[in-house]
Image (cartoon, rainbow, N blue to C red; front, side, top):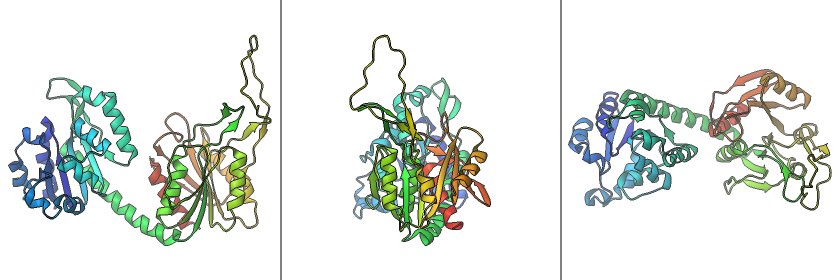
Length: 403
């Protein structure tokens, strides 16, 4: 295995020497890339002695760049590890900078990236750093939590570089996950290639008047993740999306709707000839019986407003009741009695499968991670907590193995 080890400026740079030794001892090939800041703390010759390779530190190295060396190096690695990663490096990665060798390599690579930050406790806690961290995580980067304790500056708090053995172990886990995902992706491709998938995603907004609506906290991220994963596996995907700000791939046929009735009409138009229907949308159960044509104004002395609600169509139950129905997968988002409510919904609506997940504070809606439990008439399989992209792959793999 080949690891590209990026070392950036900070007193913790000396720990990267021990990390290099661990990789070499385990049989890895190591290529170290140092930033100009890193060289202020430690000499490149130390890394060269341990790795057996000259340190790369310049984007404009005439000898290396004659053959587009930075592109070749980006393709060479099986994994890129940046340890320590300074606050400046996090900002560069966040904004897609490519004005030094390390940031250019990251931008030009599709290899897994593991980042181990190290900085002063206040720099770590700064809102700008935390926003950068959240954005990078949302893009799928693996970012280790820094350690807590006494820092070189004399202060005490979070921001210490994780120990080299921890970073080594984390990189091994990332590589194992990549290998497992590659195997799973091949199985997904074998099943989903050419199959037709119809999926609903996001919330619905039920108008009260021209400016107000009844809605929910669904972000649509889970449904969109499933659609993207299925399209990548070769499925012909039609995505019916409620009002969300998410983007979808050009190879996905997308239909944008706002209300439950609009979503129902779109499903009825597209469900035929589908191999699978996944109802991942959080469809509003009720709508206002008669929405106002003009904005409802507050009235002095009137403290209450009564809205008459009527039931919306049950989209997934309708699809499951059709004689020419596809394989139907529902979702059960619950705050308690998860398995019980999900099994009841599975039976009551005559579904082939249901995905159950708890929702609430930091769970399900609006969160990056999710935990789905897959339920059929004869099987219950709990998927571990992970990001929604991984949950999507697990769901598609479960359907492939049980259909």
